[in-house]
Each structure stands twice: as structure tokens, then as C-alpha cells.
Picture (tube, helix red, strand yellow):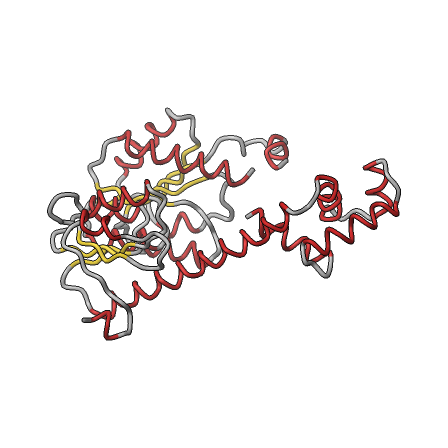
Length: 181
Length: 138
């Protein structure tokens, strides 16, 4: 009810097992998780999702939490660990924040994938030329280093810039750096 | 590169642990424990005396009690953050609750350990933290 009031789709599950049965890692989302559950506990589910490499933010809610439990959940990457009774606003804030961060992470990953794809389209020679451009060398130096003519380097440089869709060296450096981080 | 530079700066070799606790027995105990790990240890009885430091070691971490006379452990965390000092922090607490622990961790504390604690838990965490630091700084 609370989540639907802010136009978020909500699906509820009565156990970790039931949740895992219908969880789609590709869909954006956030998990509001009770620590105490029948069968697999909330903390165990968190561990399981982490082992699977899931990018699913978790907000814990609990009626009977203690410090070691809270510390374990937070150290394992939980967004928050709220004790009942908590305010609706606190929960909504955390969920919205978690969803925003997740969407940002996913966008970053997607744009990295695009750059990586462009880098893969380079020939080994173009790749070498690109690295030397990024290091800030002029065509003459690059030609010297690679034992080739300046004219050849110019041709390689042009196709690096075209394939990478970079209109300046600064942009190229930015792309290569973004792919690396 | 930086590693090599550090060799020429004597005294910067060993990682430093800053221990902040009002209880002298805790400070002494932690000092002996951490020196066994060949760590440099500096102790302070209050957050204020720690903050009076002009500079901090490049490779270091803070172990602080939550409750201190004057500025508390969480306030110390916020003060360091606002000063742009990025020191990994482990909070020790003799009296605590879930909300406080969560707040410390949300603010970036590496761990929140209740007293009394097993020495090994703390030393493992410290080695882990300083090891991590080493990796990110190379």
C-alpha cells in the first residue's frame, strides 16, 4: 500500500524461497527484507544474492534486531537496517535512494559496455596508436616508437578517432579512462 | 611509484593505528596488541586531542570508542569527513544500540564492534583495512 501510494510496483513474498523463485536479476528493483523469515533468514538471503552477484539493494526491517545482526547486514552492503516501528517516510526515502543509485550504476555499466565494444573494434595496431595518443604523444613520436611513417600513423589516428567516436584527444582520453574505471 | 617515494621518507614505513579511548587500560591493552602486529600505535584520551594532530600518516586507520568525553566517536567521524580526512574507522562500543551502529556504518565506518570483543576480530579487521588501503594507494 505504502509503496503503491508513491507509484512503485510492489510484489510481496512470504519466504526467501518464494522470492528466489520469481526474482529477475535484470529488472530494476529494491528488496525490503525482514531479518526473521521462515526457512532461509533475511541475512542468509542477502548472502545468497551477493554470492550470485545480484545488484539488488536491500533495506532490512526488523522487530527483533541486535547490534551484531545490524552490523553484519550493513557490512554486507545493506542500504539500511530499520527497526520496527519505523516511519513510512524513512522507508520510502531509503527505497527511492536505493533505486536511484541502482539506476545510476546500471547506466554507468551500460556506457562502459558501449566504450568497451568500440575499443574491441580496433585493430591491434590502432590500439597501440590509441594508447600512445592517450599518453599525449605527437604523430612524429608515435611513428618513431612504432617504427612506421608519420603518414601511416595519421591514417591509424583517424580511424581510432572514428571508431571511438571521439572528436578530440580530450574526449578520447575521457573515453579510455571511463572504460578503465 | 608512490611506494618507492615512501622509502625515502623514514618513519612512513609502518602503518599507523590511532587509538582513541578515555579508558587508559583499553589504550594500553590495544597498544600491546597492535604492536605485536608491527603497527605504529598512537593513543589519545579524547577526540579533541586526536584532532589537534597537524597531519595523519598516509597509511593509517582509527580505532575509536563510541562514547568519549566531549566529542563522541560518531561526531569525530563527521568532523574528519567534513575536513576531507579519509581515514578508515573502526568503532568500539561498550554501550550501544542498533540505530547507532547502523548510523556509524552508513557514515562509512568499516566496522562497529561491541566491547568486550575478541582480540582476533579487531586485529583481523585492522589488517584487512590496512591491506585494502595499500592496494588502493598503489
